[in-house]
Amino acid sequence: MASNSLVDIFRIKDLRNRILFTIFALIIFRLGVFIPIPGIDRNAVIAYFNQGSGAGGIFDFIDFFVGGAFSNVSIFMQGIMPYITTSIIMNLLTIIFPKLKKISEEEGGKKKIQRYTRYLTIPVCILQTMASITLPLSIPNALTGMNELQFRLIAVLTVTTGTIFLVWLGEQITNRGVGNGISILIFAGIVARMPQAVVTLVEEIRNPNSNLNPVFLFVVMFIFVVVIALVIYEQQGQRKIPVHYAKRVVGRKVYGAQNTYLPFKINPSGVIPVIFASAVLTFPIQIAQSFKNIDWLQGMVSFLAWDKLPYNIIYALMIIFFSYFYTQVTLNPYEISKNIREHGGSIPGIRSEKMEGYLNRILQRIILPGSLFLAFIAIIPTVITLVFNFPHSVAMLLGGTSLLILVGVDLDTMSQIEGHLRMHHHDGLLKKGRIKSRNL
Image 1 (cartoon, rainbow, N blue to C red):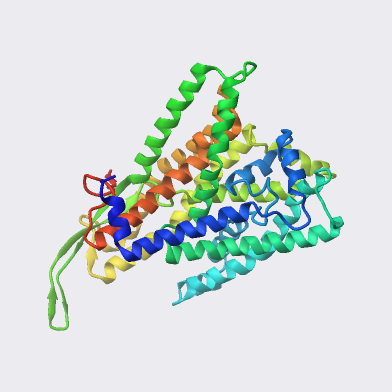
Image 2 (cartoon, rainbow, N blue to C red):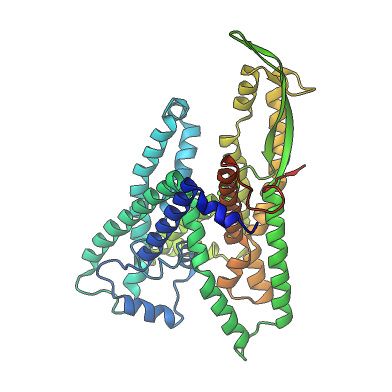
Protein backbone atom coordinates (compact mmCIF):
# COMPACT_ATOMS: atom_id res chain seq x y z
CA MET A 1 0.00 0.00 0.00
CA ALA A 2 1.35 3.44 -0.87
CA SER A 3 2.67 5.44 2.06
CA ASN A 4 0.15 8.25 1.58
CA SER A 5 -2.85 6.05 0.76
CA LEU A 6 -4.28 6.10 4.30
CA VAL A 7 -3.82 9.87 4.43
CA ASP A 8 -5.64 10.24 1.10
CA ILE A 9 -8.50 8.05 2.34
CA PHE A 10 -9.14 10.32 5.32
CA ARG A 11 -8.67 13.51 3.29
CA ILE A 12 -11.73 12.68 1.18
CA LYS A 13 -14.73 13.60 3.32
CA ASP A 14 -17.21 11.22 1.69
CA LEU A 15 -14.85 8.22 1.84
CA ARG A 16 -13.78 9.09 5.39
CA ASN A 17 -17.40 9.22 6.53
CA ARG A 18 -18.16 5.91 4.84
CA ILE A 19 -15.23 4.14 6.50
CA LEU A 20 -16.01 5.61 9.93
CA PHE A 21 -19.67 4.61 9.56
CA THR A 22 -18.65 1.04 8.64
CA ILE A 23 -16.36 0.84 11.69
CA PHE A 24 -19.13 2.21 13.93
CA ALA A 25 -21.60 -0.36 12.56
CA LEU A 26 -19.14 -3.21 13.15
CA ILE A 27 -18.59 -2.04 16.74
CA ILE A 28 -22.35 -2.22 17.32
CA PHE A 29 -22.39 -5.71 15.81
CA ARG A 30 -19.56 -6.90 18.05
CA LEU A 31 -21.16 -5.40 21.18
CA GLY A 32 -24.42 -7.19 20.40
CA VAL A 33 -22.58 -10.52 20.23
CA PHE A 34 -22.00 -10.30 23.99
CA ILE A 35 -25.57 -9.35 24.98
CA PRO A 36 -27.29 -12.57 26.12
CA ILE A 37 -30.93 -13.39 25.63
CA PRO A 38 -32.97 -12.29 28.69
CA GLY A 39 -33.29 -15.13 31.17
CA ILE A 40 -29.88 -16.67 30.41
CA ASP A 41 -27.13 -16.93 33.01
CA ARG A 42 -24.10 -16.05 30.90
CA ASN A 43 -21.67 -17.37 33.53
CA ALA A 44 -23.29 -20.81 33.36
CA VAL A 45 -23.00 -20.77 29.56
CA ILE A 46 -19.33 -19.72 29.66
CA ALA A 47 -18.55 -22.41 32.26
CA TYR A 48 -20.28 -25.01 30.08
CA PHE A 49 -18.19 -24.18 27.01
CA ASN A 50 -14.96 -23.76 29.00
CA GLN A 51 -15.35 -27.36 30.15
CA GLY A 52 -14.92 -28.37 26.52
CA SER A 53 -18.53 -29.44 26.11
CA GLY A 54 -18.98 -27.32 23.02
CA ALA A 55 -22.05 -26.96 20.87
CA GLY A 56 -21.09 -29.73 18.50
CA GLY A 57 -22.04 -30.46 14.93
CA ILE A 58 -23.78 -27.77 12.94
CA PHE A 59 -24.01 -25.44 15.95
CA ASP A 60 -20.20 -25.06 15.94
CA PHE A 61 -20.43 -24.18 12.25
CA ILE A 62 -23.06 -21.49 12.93
CA ASP A 63 -21.09 -20.12 15.87
CA PHE A 64 -18.06 -19.75 13.62
CA PHE A 65 -19.92 -17.50 11.15
CA VAL A 66 -21.66 -15.35 13.74
CA GLY A 67 -18.44 -14.53 15.56
CA GLY A 68 -19.16 -16.48 18.75
CA ALA A 69 -22.68 -15.07 19.21
CA PHE A 70 -24.16 -18.57 19.29
CA SER A 71 -21.97 -19.83 22.12
CA ASN A 72 -22.78 -16.61 24.03
CA VAL A 73 -26.52 -17.32 23.53
CA SER A 74 -26.65 -13.76 22.26
CA ILE A 75 -29.47 -11.75 20.73
CA PHE A 76 -27.43 -12.06 17.49
CA MET A 77 -27.02 -15.84 17.84
CA GLN A 78 -28.50 -16.46 14.37
CA GLY A 79 -26.51 -13.68 12.72
CA ILE A 80 -27.80 -13.04 9.21
CA MET A 81 -27.98 -16.70 8.21
CA PRO A 82 -31.83 -16.66 8.12
CA TYR A 83 -31.70 -13.72 5.69
CA ILE A 84 -29.26 -15.57 3.44
CA THR A 85 -31.48 -18.65 3.47
CA THR A 86 -34.48 -16.49 2.59
CA SER A 87 -32.57 -14.79 -0.23
CA ILE A 88 -31.92 -18.20 -1.78
CA ILE A 89 -35.60 -19.10 -1.49
CA MET A 90 -36.65 -15.81 -3.11
CA ASN A 91 -34.15 -16.23 -5.97
CA LEU A 92 -35.54 -19.69 -6.67
CA LEU A 93 -39.15 -18.46 -6.46
CA THR A 94 -38.36 -15.62 -8.86
CA ILE A 95 -37.21 -18.15 -11.45
CA ILE A 96 -40.08 -20.59 -10.84
CA PHE A 97 -42.97 -18.07 -10.78
CA PRO A 98 -43.24 -15.76 -13.84
CA LYS A 99 -45.24 -13.19 -11.85
CA LEU A 100 -42.38 -12.67 -9.39
CA LYS A 101 -39.89 -12.49 -12.27
CA LYS A 102 -42.03 -9.83 -13.93
CA ILE A 103 -42.11 -7.83 -10.68
CA SER A 104 -38.32 -8.04 -10.37
CA GLU A 105 -37.87 -6.67 -13.90
CA GLU A 106 -40.17 -3.70 -13.38
CA GLU A 107 -38.95 -0.28 -12.28
CA GLY A 108 -38.42 -0.50 -8.53
CA GLY A 109 -39.02 -4.26 -8.72
CA LYS A 110 -35.76 -5.19 -7.01
CA LYS A 111 -36.74 -3.11 -3.98
CA LYS A 112 -40.07 -4.96 -3.82
CA ILE A 113 -38.30 -8.32 -3.91
CA GLN A 114 -35.93 -7.15 -1.17
CA ARG A 115 -38.93 -6.12 0.92
CA TYR A 116 -40.56 -9.53 0.41
CA THR A 117 -37.25 -11.14 1.39
CA ARG A 118 -37.16 -9.20 4.66
CA TYR A 119 -40.73 -10.22 5.45
CA LEU A 120 -40.02 -13.89 4.73
CA THR A 121 -36.87 -13.72 6.88
CA ILE A 122 -39.06 -13.41 10.00
CA PRO A 123 -40.70 -16.88 9.83
CA VAL A 124 -37.41 -18.48 8.71
CA CYS A 125 -35.62 -16.92 11.69
CA ILE A 126 -38.38 -18.08 14.06
CA LEU A 127 -37.96 -21.67 12.85
CA GLN A 128 -34.18 -21.58 13.15
CA THR A 129 -34.31 -19.98 16.59
CA MET A 130 -36.78 -22.57 17.90
CA ALA A 131 -34.34 -25.24 16.73
CA SER A 132 -31.25 -23.48 18.11
CA ILE A 133 -32.45 -22.79 21.64
CA THR A 134 -32.52 -26.50 22.40
CA LEU A 135 -28.79 -26.14 23.16
CA PRO A 136 -29.02 -23.44 25.89
CA LEU A 137 -31.99 -25.27 27.37
CA SER A 138 -29.75 -28.32 27.83
CA ILE A 139 -27.10 -26.36 29.78
CA PRO A 140 -27.43 -26.95 33.56
CA ASN A 141 -28.58 -23.86 35.52
CA ALA A 142 -28.61 -21.71 32.37
CA LEU A 143 -32.16 -20.41 32.86
CA THR A 144 -32.77 -17.79 35.54
CA GLY A 145 -36.06 -16.29 36.69
CA MET A 146 -38.35 -17.91 34.12
CA ASN A 147 -39.66 -21.25 32.97
CA GLU A 148 -38.90 -22.98 29.68
CA LEU A 149 -41.99 -21.72 27.84
CA GLN A 150 -41.32 -18.11 28.81
CA PHE A 151 -37.71 -18.43 27.69
CA ARG A 152 -38.71 -19.90 24.33
CA LEU A 153 -41.08 -17.01 23.64
CA ILE A 154 -38.57 -14.34 24.69
CA ALA A 155 -35.74 -16.06 22.78
CA VAL A 156 -37.74 -16.21 19.56
CA LEU A 157 -38.74 -12.55 19.91
CA THR A 158 -35.28 -11.19 20.78
CA VAL A 159 -33.25 -13.31 18.34
CA THR A 160 -35.63 -12.58 15.45
CA THR A 161 -35.45 -8.88 16.28
CA GLY A 162 -31.65 -9.15 16.43
CA THR A 163 -31.50 -10.78 13.00
CA ILE A 164 -33.77 -8.16 11.40
CA PHE A 165 -31.65 -5.45 13.01
CA LEU A 166 -28.49 -7.00 11.50
CA VAL A 167 -30.17 -7.11 8.07
CA TRP A 168 -30.98 -3.41 8.44
CA LEU A 169 -27.43 -2.72 9.66
CA GLY A 170 -25.99 -4.57 6.67
CA GLU A 171 -28.13 -2.50 4.30
CA GLN A 172 -26.95 0.69 5.99
CA ILE A 173 -23.31 -0.37 5.51
CA THR A 174 -24.00 -1.01 1.82
CA ASN A 175 -25.68 2.38 1.36
CA ARG A 176 -23.63 4.57 3.70
CA GLY A 177 -20.42 2.60 4.25
CA VAL A 178 -17.93 0.66 2.15
CA GLY A 179 -18.38 -2.85 0.77
CA ASN A 180 -21.39 -5.14 0.74
CA GLY A 181 -22.94 -4.87 4.21
CA ILE A 182 -24.10 -8.47 4.54
CA SER A 183 -20.70 -9.80 3.46
CA ILE A 184 -18.90 -7.35 5.76
CA LEU A 185 -20.86 -8.66 8.77
CA ILE A 186 -19.95 -12.26 7.92
CA PHE A 187 -16.35 -11.13 7.39
CA ALA A 188 -16.31 -9.47 10.83
CA GLY A 189 -17.69 -12.61 12.49
CA ILE A 190 -14.95 -14.78 10.98
CA VAL A 191 -12.16 -12.31 11.81
CA ALA A 192 -13.38 -12.16 15.42
CA ARG A 193 -12.67 -15.89 15.80
CA MET A 194 -9.04 -15.60 14.69
CA PRO A 195 -7.53 -14.74 18.11
CA GLN A 196 -9.20 -17.75 19.73
CA ALA A 197 -8.04 -19.99 16.87
CA VAL A 198 -4.45 -18.78 17.35
CA VAL A 199 -4.69 -19.46 21.11
CA THR A 200 -6.03 -22.97 20.39
CA LEU A 201 -3.17 -23.66 17.99
CA VAL A 202 -0.53 -22.43 20.46
CA GLU A 203 -2.01 -24.56 23.25
CA GLU A 204 -2.02 -27.57 20.95
CA ILE A 205 1.64 -27.00 20.06
CA ARG A 206 2.68 -26.59 23.71
CA ASN A 207 0.71 -29.62 24.86
CA PRO A 208 3.20 -32.51 25.35
CA ASN A 209 0.42 -35.04 24.71
CA SER A 210 -0.59 -33.43 21.45
CA ASN A 211 -0.60 -35.48 18.26
CA LEU A 212 0.18 -32.39 16.19
CA ASN A 213 3.37 -33.04 14.22
CA PRO A 214 5.66 -29.96 13.73
CA VAL A 215 6.29 -31.06 10.15
CA PHE A 216 2.55 -31.21 9.55
CA LEU A 217 2.24 -27.72 11.02
CA PHE A 218 4.77 -26.40 8.52
CA VAL A 219 3.00 -28.19 5.65
CA VAL A 220 -0.38 -26.77 6.66
CA MET A 221 1.00 -23.23 6.92
CA PHE A 222 2.54 -23.61 3.48
CA ILE A 223 -0.81 -24.83 2.13
CA PHE A 224 -2.44 -21.82 3.79
CA VAL A 225 -0.17 -19.36 1.94
CA VAL A 226 -0.60 -21.19 -1.38
CA VAL A 227 -4.38 -21.26 -1.02
CA ILE A 228 -4.52 -17.51 -0.35
CA ALA A 229 -2.43 -16.86 -3.48
CA LEU A 230 -4.67 -19.16 -5.55
CA VAL A 231 -7.86 -17.55 -4.25
CA ILE A 232 -6.60 -14.06 -5.11
CA TYR A 233 -5.43 -15.29 -8.53
CA GLU A 234 -8.82 -16.85 -9.21
CA GLN A 235 -10.87 -13.92 -7.89
CA GLN A 236 -9.03 -11.46 -10.14
CA GLY A 237 -9.10 -13.60 -13.31
CA GLN A 238 -11.15 -12.30 -16.26
CA ARG A 239 -12.10 -13.32 -19.77
CA LYS A 240 -12.53 -10.16 -21.85
CA ILE A 241 -15.02 -10.36 -24.73
CA PRO A 242 -14.39 -7.56 -27.29
CA VAL A 243 -17.42 -5.45 -28.24
CA HIS A 244 -17.47 -2.94 -31.12
CA TYR A 245 -19.99 -0.07 -31.28
CA ALA A 246 -20.58 1.55 -34.69
CA LYS A 247 -21.11 5.27 -35.32
CA ARG A 248 -24.49 6.54 -34.19
CA VAL A 249 -26.45 9.72 -34.94
CA VAL A 250 -28.46 11.02 -31.99
CA GLY A 251 -30.20 14.27 -32.87
CA ARG A 252 -27.57 16.54 -34.37
CA LYS A 253 -24.68 14.76 -32.71
CA VAL A 254 -22.63 11.95 -34.26
CA TYR A 255 -21.05 9.54 -31.84
CA GLY A 256 -17.91 7.81 -33.09
CA ALA A 257 -17.13 4.13 -33.11
CA GLN A 258 -15.98 2.69 -29.80
CA ASN A 259 -14.18 -0.50 -28.90
CA THR A 260 -14.72 -1.95 -25.44
CA TYR A 261 -15.09 -5.35 -23.82
CA LEU A 262 -17.27 -7.46 -21.51
CA PRO A 263 -15.31 -8.54 -18.42
CA PHE A 264 -16.39 -12.09 -17.50
CA LYS A 265 -14.72 -13.28 -14.31
CA ILE A 266 -13.64 -16.90 -13.84
CA ASN A 267 -15.86 -16.84 -10.79
CA PRO A 268 -18.61 -14.30 -11.63
CA SER A 269 -20.62 -15.03 -8.48
CA GLY A 270 -17.72 -14.50 -6.05
CA VAL A 271 -18.20 -16.10 -2.63
CA ILE A 272 -22.01 -16.18 -2.95
CA PRO A 273 -22.16 -19.92 -3.94
CA VAL A 274 -20.17 -20.87 -0.83
CA ILE A 275 -22.38 -18.78 1.46
CA PHE A 276 -25.54 -20.12 -0.18
CA ALA A 277 -24.39 -23.75 0.02
CA SER A 278 -23.48 -23.32 3.70
CA ALA A 279 -26.86 -21.76 4.49
CA VAL A 280 -28.85 -24.42 2.62
CA LEU A 281 -27.03 -27.25 4.39
CA THR A 282 -27.22 -25.53 7.77
CA PHE A 283 -30.96 -24.90 7.78
CA PRO A 284 -32.35 -28.50 7.58
CA ILE A 285 -29.58 -29.95 9.77
CA GLN A 286 -30.20 -27.28 12.38
CA ILE A 287 -33.93 -28.07 12.43
CA ALA A 288 -33.32 -31.83 12.53
CA GLN A 289 -30.74 -31.60 15.32
CA SER A 290 -33.33 -30.02 17.63
CA PHE A 291 -35.56 -33.14 17.53
CA LYS A 292 -33.52 -35.43 19.75
CA ASN A 293 -36.31 -37.98 20.12
CA ILE A 294 -36.78 -38.70 16.40
CA ASP A 295 -34.30 -41.39 15.43
CA TRP A 296 -34.38 -40.98 11.66
CA LEU A 297 -33.72 -37.25 11.92
CA GLN A 298 -30.76 -37.87 14.23
CA GLY A 299 -29.55 -40.47 11.74
CA MET A 300 -29.64 -37.80 9.02
CA VAL A 301 -27.69 -35.40 11.25
CA SER A 302 -25.04 -38.07 11.85
CA PHE A 303 -24.95 -38.94 8.14
CA LEU A 304 -24.36 -35.28 7.25
CA ALA A 305 -21.64 -34.63 9.83
CA TRP A 306 -18.96 -32.23 8.56
CA ASP A 307 -16.17 -34.83 8.85
CA LYS A 308 -17.95 -37.44 6.71
CA LEU A 309 -17.82 -37.99 2.98
CA PRO A 310 -21.57 -37.48 2.20
CA TYR A 311 -21.58 -33.98 3.70
CA ASN A 312 -18.52 -32.88 1.74
CA ILE A 313 -19.80 -34.36 -1.54
CA ILE A 314 -23.19 -32.63 -1.14
CA TYR A 315 -21.47 -29.42 -0.08
CA ALA A 316 -19.21 -29.43 -3.16
CA LEU A 317 -22.11 -30.22 -5.53
CA MET A 318 -24.20 -27.42 -4.04
CA ILE A 319 -21.36 -24.93 -4.52
CA ILE A 320 -21.12 -25.94 -8.19
CA PHE A 321 -24.91 -25.68 -8.57
CA PHE A 322 -25.12 -22.22 -6.99
CA SER A 323 -22.18 -21.03 -9.09
CA TYR A 324 -24.20 -21.76 -12.23
CA PHE A 325 -27.49 -20.64 -10.71
CA TYR A 326 -26.31 -17.27 -9.41
CA THR A 327 -24.33 -16.51 -12.57
CA GLN A 328 -27.43 -17.11 -14.70
CA VAL A 329 -29.40 -14.76 -12.45
CA THR A 330 -26.83 -11.94 -12.49
CA LEU A 331 -25.29 -12.45 -15.96
CA ASN A 332 -28.13 -13.43 -18.26
CA PRO A 333 -26.67 -13.91 -21.81
CA TYR A 334 -30.04 -12.99 -23.34
CA GLU A 335 -30.22 -9.66 -21.51
CA ILE A 336 -26.57 -8.86 -22.24
CA SER A 337 -27.00 -9.62 -25.96
CA LYS A 338 -30.20 -7.58 -26.11
CA ASN A 339 -28.48 -4.61 -24.46
CA ILE A 340 -25.52 -4.77 -26.88
CA ARG A 341 -27.81 -4.89 -29.93
CA GLU A 342 -30.00 -2.03 -28.68
CA HIS A 343 -26.94 0.20 -28.41
CA GLY A 344 -25.67 -0.71 -31.86
CA GLY A 345 -22.92 -3.01 -30.67
CA SER A 346 -21.54 -6.27 -32.00
CA ILE A 347 -18.96 -8.90 -31.12
CA PRO A 348 -16.33 -9.26 -33.89
CA GLY A 349 -16.79 -12.48 -35.85
CA ILE A 350 -20.16 -13.32 -34.24
CA ARG A 351 -23.47 -12.79 -36.03
CA SER A 352 -26.07 -10.78 -34.12
CA GLU A 353 -28.58 -13.64 -33.79
CA LYS A 354 -25.87 -15.98 -32.48
CA MET A 355 -24.52 -13.59 -29.85
CA GLU A 356 -26.56 -15.06 -27.01
CA GLY A 357 -25.37 -18.61 -27.74
CA TYR A 358 -21.77 -17.45 -27.98
CA LEU A 359 -21.88 -15.63 -24.61
CA ASN A 360 -23.61 -18.60 -23.02
CA ARG A 361 -20.85 -20.97 -24.23
CA ILE A 362 -18.16 -18.64 -22.86
CA LEU A 363 -19.89 -18.47 -19.48
CA GLN A 364 -20.30 -22.25 -19.30
CA ARG A 365 -16.60 -22.76 -20.00
CA ILE A 366 -15.34 -20.34 -17.37
CA ILE A 367 -17.89 -21.18 -14.64
CA LEU A 368 -17.00 -24.88 -14.51
CA PRO A 369 -13.32 -24.49 -13.51
CA GLY A 370 -14.25 -21.60 -11.23
CA SER A 371 -16.92 -23.61 -9.42
CA LEU A 372 -14.67 -26.67 -9.12
CA PHE A 373 -11.98 -24.47 -7.60
CA LEU A 374 -14.48 -23.06 -5.06
CA ALA A 375 -15.61 -26.57 -4.13
CA PHE A 376 -12.02 -27.73 -3.71
CA ILE A 377 -11.13 -24.81 -1.43
CA ALA A 378 -14.32 -25.30 0.61
CA ILE A 379 -13.45 -28.87 1.67
CA ILE A 380 -9.82 -28.10 2.57
CA PRO A 381 -10.56 -27.68 6.33
CA THR A 382 -11.99 -31.19 6.51
CA VAL A 383 -8.95 -32.63 4.72
CA ILE A 384 -6.53 -30.73 6.98
CA THR A 385 -8.40 -31.83 10.12
CA LEU A 386 -8.55 -35.51 9.18
CA VAL A 387 -5.18 -35.93 7.48
CA PHE A 388 -2.97 -33.68 9.62
CA ASN A 389 -4.87 -34.07 12.91
CA PHE A 390 -5.37 -30.31 13.10
CA PRO A 391 -7.88 -28.58 15.46
CA HIS A 392 -11.00 -28.02 13.38
CA SER A 393 -11.53 -24.43 14.60
CA VAL A 394 -8.04 -23.56 13.29
CA ALA A 395 -8.45 -25.53 10.06
CA MET A 396 -11.65 -23.61 9.26
CA LEU A 397 -9.62 -20.39 9.26
CA LEU A 398 -6.79 -21.84 7.19
CA GLY A 399 -8.99 -22.70 4.24
CA GLY A 400 -12.45 -23.36 3.01
CA THR A 401 -15.45 -21.12 3.29
CA SER A 402 -13.88 -18.67 5.72
CA LEU A 403 -10.81 -18.04 3.58
CA LEU A 404 -12.89 -17.56 0.43
CA ILE A 405 -15.10 -15.05 2.23
CA LEU A 406 -12.18 -13.22 3.82
CA VAL A 407 -10.26 -12.84 0.55
CA GLY A 408 -13.35 -12.15 -1.58
CA VAL A 409 -14.80 -9.48 0.72
CA ASP A 410 -11.37 -7.91 1.22
CA LEU A 411 -10.77 -7.63 -2.54
CA ASP A 412 -14.25 -6.20 -3.17
CA THR A 413 -13.88 -3.63 -0.39
CA MET A 414 -10.40 -2.61 -1.54
CA SER A 415 -11.71 -2.26 -5.08
CA GLN A 416 -14.52 0.01 -3.88
CA ILE A 417 -12.13 2.18 -1.86
CA GLU A 418 -9.82 2.31 -4.90
CA GLY A 419 -12.73 3.55 -7.00
CA HIS A 420 -13.48 6.36 -4.52
CA LEU A 421 -9.83 7.42 -4.47
CA ARG A 422 -9.54 7.55 -8.25
CA MET A 423 -12.86 9.36 -8.57
CA HIS A 424 -11.30 12.16 -6.49
CA HIS A 425 -8.07 12.06 -8.56
CA HIS A 426 -5.92 10.34 -5.94
CA ASP A 427 -3.55 7.42 -6.37
CA GLY A 428 -4.92 3.95 -5.66
CA LEU A 429 -4.20 1.71 -2.70
CA LEU A 430 -1.21 0.11 -4.40
CA LYS A 431 2.08 1.75 -5.31
CA LYS A 432 2.02 0.43 -8.85
CA GLY A 433 -1.22 1.27 -10.62
CA ARG A 434 -4.50 -0.10 -9.43
CA ILE A 435 -5.90 -3.40 -8.25
CA LYS A 436 -5.79 -5.17 -11.60
CA SER A 437 -7.60 -8.15 -12.99
CA ARG A 438 -5.85 -10.77 -15.09
CA ASN A 439 -6.83 -11.48 -18.64
CA LEU A 440 -7.49 -15.01 -19.77
